[in-house]
Image (cartoon, rainbow, N blue to C red; front, top):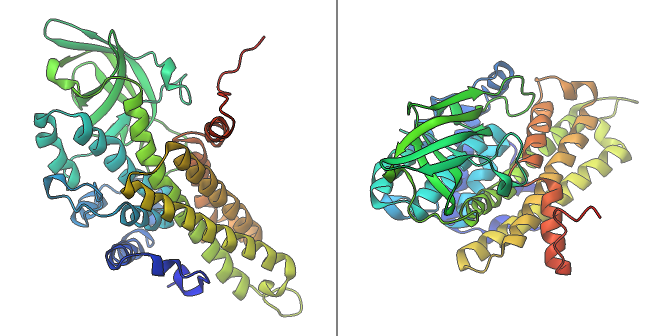
Length: 393
């Protein structure tokens, strides 16, 4: 079994605590035993394996960094290495855990009522319930402020109308965290599956994240009781805070994808014989690609590690999250491309993990803030000038 730690010249492993290494090893073994033997078939067939959800709950992967309700209360770095090991297996598996933790449990714990917390957190933590996060809309992805989903107050509760798109877990979720505009600004609602007026449509034809469920949520005069709203929500800043939590985990997960394609390329280069009965690893151009991948993976891990330490210390700025997400997903994307080149024609078949990771990372490159959007976030930090939506005149 390949272990990046065995070739790490900077001994990043020494910067982890004993608990963080223990968590990493436990998740690594589970991924190797339960995900790796089946993931190509699941992705090929477009299947999300729901049977793994309670197993993930038993491993305390959901809400790992939270401490309420007897949750593990692990460090942010421990949560990060969970993301890295899961995405080493597949981006869709990591996405499931990330949504459940950062986009569903986090807002309920942070802004939900006591009754909402009591009902949902224990169920979500053990994988006995599945959640999804409804923010993105068909016409408003990178501009959530333009959302059209509306919630109107009534004498008995609320009525929602609108649509959400590209929602991970949407069609299999027991509860949806849905963001809608109200007369008092953007509020968050917990809407249970089966609620009249609430339906889902699964996105079909995906080349990416095929071992993951992606859906559209539709609300047509959907009536919910007054206590469906999360009382602590009060504006667009709330869902954006959720996204920051998820983007932190993605910065780690992307490095897991990069490690997967790099390790496959390294092994292939050392065993593929070509020209004068030598492995292709003997060629300078191949070594140049491997060195680039290795170099960037090292740097990306250090970025996320320091980001996690700052997160736990309360010193993390949201622009730093943009730096890590933007850099590490780009690194994973480039690693997948280089691994495809090293594998030659074999890079396009599912005997190897390259094309699956390459297609997956295209989605990760776009969601939770596109590469360009994070560029503008960092640009605004550096210059003090907001470049979003510039005037046309």
